[in-house]
Image 1 (cartoon, protein in one colour):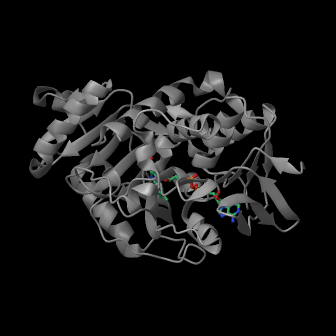
Image 2 (cartoon, helix red, strand yellow):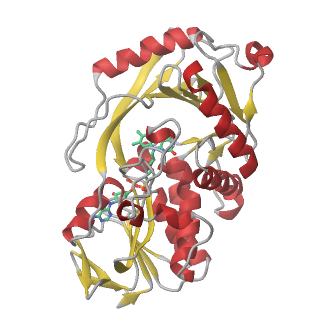
Length: 389
Ligand SMILES: Cc1cc2nc3c(=O)[nH]c(=O)nc-3n(C[C@H](O)[C@H](O)[C@H](O)COP(=O)(O)OP(=O)(O)OC[C@H]3O[C@@H](n4cnc5c(N)ncnc54)[C@H](O)[C@@H]3O)c2cc1C
């Protein structure tokens, strides 16, 4: 281990891993990443990992588009297989959201995203397994789908170490050290690791780490449940990732007739202690999912539950992440607050954050993601609310 690093990252989820890799890729010399367990052992490893570009602000749409480009190139750039499944993505839109969805679609096309309404005349052929009751519109993105969150994160970290980065797993960051208005390093069990730059990418646990150093970080940890089902029949099964805003569920085909299904926004959110929460899903949640799916996808009425679990969303006051420098603390960077949609934008966030750290400035409107927006009272407003962004 060196005496001092140019940058130190706390947390080996998608955000920390992408940031670490891009810092090395863009030429920073001494970079270290600390992970208390193993890579992707936080929210990343449990993520539904839907990849979509349907967002309601230009900034987020641009980041989602850039991430898709990075996902598409991952097999070459990171030398990994089966990281991204470009199955396509659809959003089912209820009548009350049609106008907002149409506005978003226009903005997304201007940003360069390939997306459009699926004409009603094509519904029967394109989504034959869908009960279209109460569905007023279907939005289609051919370049959406899902990723394998563990393979992507491990892929970034493998390449990071190949480029000379230092990965320390099973290493708990106990404290960030501040001196005269700047961070100078962190405390681990073995002692102090000094670094000019500290990136707090510890997901829901970023808050206790920050607060220990007197750094304000208004994150809430919400328990998020997911279920995995298997169809016992063959045939024309759903084959696209789906945000179903009509019934508030998300639906992700996993291959081998398996489907990941969770509840989407709006729903009740329960704030929990990130170090102590229930890891299994509730029976009521599971039966509710089954009921919705049987109605919306009748072909799946005999599906069988394979697995269910709960993990954490780290949610900011406006459901947009905190990324970047803070004007009040030199050397400290946030990369947290994924707010339930942080996986797909993780690759692009890490890329732009690395440029910001190295160049001392950032491009376009990326700096708006800084925590500074809280003090400036410049919060984001997503068209649909919550993690729909
Ligand atoms: C059930 C579920 C479904 C989701 N579905 C989607 C989806 O479909 N699409 C999407 O885009 N997003 C989705 N998300 C959100 C997305 O997965 C997260 O926003 C993203 O993965 C967060 O990544 P991260 O790297 O910021 O944090 P994390 O993955 O939580 O990583 C933080 C890491 O920091 C480590 N750490 C914590 N404390 C310390 C410490 N003191 N010292 C060292 N290391 C520490 C942890 O062990 C962990 O590995 C979902 C999230 C959940 C929970």
